[in-house]
Length: 98
Image (cartoon, rainbow, N blue to C red; front, side, top):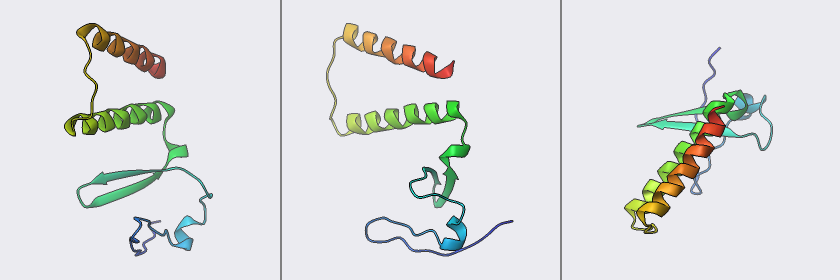
């Protein structure tokens, strides 16, 4: 059954989920927010597959690094240092996917 409610965004960026919609949620429970243009979707993290959670963390780190790069906040490395870092990153990715 679909339930509907209207809420507001506070000046601090907080959104109140009306009590009748959050009765099954626990304080401190993690929620995933997916934004696509003007649409936002909330999803309980506990219901998300473990592999997807790890891949999501990697994607978020990559996005954060890209933003730092775009702002000119990055470290210059030699080709050898860069390749070693990628190798370490791939080792971690392989472990996550197992």
